[in-house]
Image (cartoon, rainbow, N blue to C red; front, top):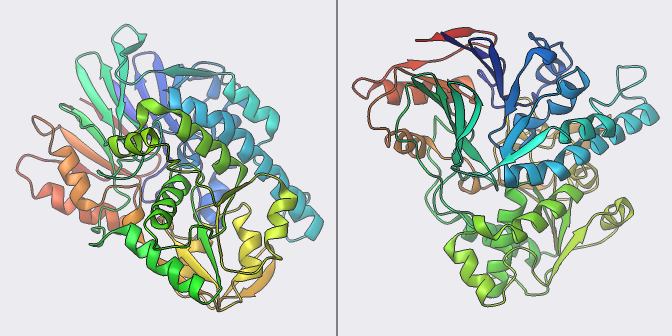
Length: 460
């Protein structure tokens, strides 16, 4: 008998963590942190409902922090077994976890300096030593390579799109097949190959981030071009909060394309202000095996698809601070994508009060995040303990999301030869889960379960 425990991403889009218990083996699929409201983030500090030393392995779908950010804490708690990931995911984590540790340490230092934290003293969630401990456990695995953890227990990574290295996981547990979707990407997006699809599953965990909506018609590239061109015309500054891995590279790809076709000035200064995003861009550029045909064709012509001639890569903190003294026109792409931390917050403090600024959202904004509050029309927000008026032009391009929409998710599971015994919807807010559940339940023979956090389900 196998049991699956849902430890996160139930009714929310963050905190992905699922414990698969098969016989005496305990496998953790994803090991993410909660993001968003203070109530959600407070959960990260709670002791997990399992002994870290009892886990035999961790298997990761992809590198995003809501799927990997608890690994350093797990290692600190005594976990010392393998962490399996695709080779590109393992490569990204070499940058992502130390960068996250640095941000945690900087945020704690700044909070103590300014005195705005209710904790005395404020402590980093994890530090550089914790990150290094987690990285030592990584075991890179190729796509399509069957990996046996124990007799009767094996898994295979298949491409999920979404970001570099993202996978869905097909688990073999005795005679059962359990598929974990991870985050399913869209088809026909820049840089990366399209997602693959599962052919069979007895049980399927499916993300539902965009389960209640369809991406708008029209090219996201054209919408980016329009927003940036209008801001350039008034000599303003475009701030683009972007996830350092995936979204930042897509944005740079589109901006470069718009410069090549003359929509945007070829000398328009574009700043990628995130050490993690800079490192990720280098990895995206060098991982040739994951590039799609369009990207390969550009590279064969000697065109840099991501790091174009007017793109300035900002690693140093002093160079980031200097940007706040510059006038427009220019574009600043910075993390984090949901405004939950990072350098983008410092740029917002300086630029949000300026009506010549355009704040351009290009990714999902989870409930409780600063990004969601601004997107929903907040006139004033608190950043680093200070109230900042929102006078900037706020825009959103949801079609640029790295997640499949409702149609894409239904199409993805439609590749299964027969319906699974059950589809467990995770990684989605309640309205998104409910809407996607209704659509799937309308298909003959399909059963949908909406698991609650902490729930354990026996997989018959």
